[in-house]
Length: 437
Image (cartoon, rainbow, N blue to C red; front, side):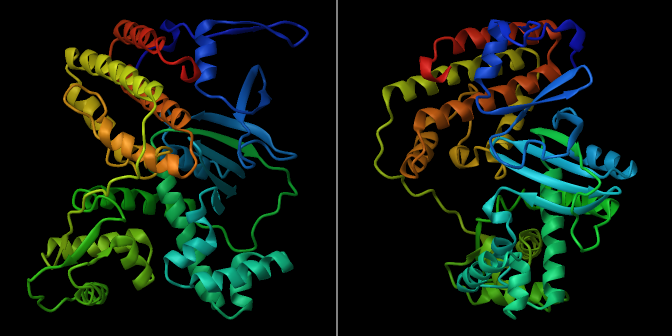
């Protein structure tokens, strides 16, 4: 770990009238990488810039900042354990790219969780579990809009769910989001102290220690599952091997499901929906059958993207970033850490929860450390068809990948080597098309 006292930090100068009178070039480069709207929070002699791009990130009325930091420096498992042991009450906001998660704490336990991802909403979660269908969700949403009630309450009122089913699903949703959040390796967090009159859910808070133990268990098991099953969209099918008597009823039910799917098979997500279980549980069941040789992974290739012509400036942008990636890789190889860098980058690119997962899907690095261009362009074509600007998508994603790679270097290189590498990368980036620097 580098000594922060040896590294000159970018600075800006504010005069007594509150005007920003000077911004160093390195500070400007740092700010350019994080464009957006921010709120200022003062905590003693510290001033924080907190993103206000989405409604949940910044402080709500009556809230005050108690703690803030970098997930890479303070792992979320450690943070949550600390807050639980301290019996904190407050709102923890965690942000990584465009993804935001919130944990509401009450006396050190978890009162509720939230997310800005549509897949994490209660209605979507219940559909993934197979508890309701799209038509039923629409009816509940219409009732919720008229009555002001929550989706879950409306589903119970419409007799589409029993109260005990809803409570079980809420607990599973909280556990799943909490466990997934604790696996994040990058991002930022802010703990807000909430006012005394802050409304808490009527349902009992879940034990922090139980959730932490479950998060650790799932992370350990999932690391094993992922060696055979890359993600929940992986497709599996029945093999010719005959099944002996399956002791676990869940395994038997899962096996019977695959037995009826033919050569097409099914994805893990489809298994979860059909069996009405969480995706983690579906992954575990599929892994057990896979190990037994009763099902196999269907090797699928990515279908070609729609016709798309990459702009000359965007191709130049990729080439310049790749030049920087090669420079980073060469420095790490000289220091004896080339394999560590490559492994970290590949895990970053394959992370389905990453902020730029759609752009980096199926993307790998070659032996020189550069990104493979063809799958990157195919993904860019898909995103362009959805209305995203290619230049902006590339710049944001490749900037974050650069920061991640330099973060890895900072952990392993000497301070002098790390500083020199950062300077060389900035010189390479200086030739980027002006709109994306």
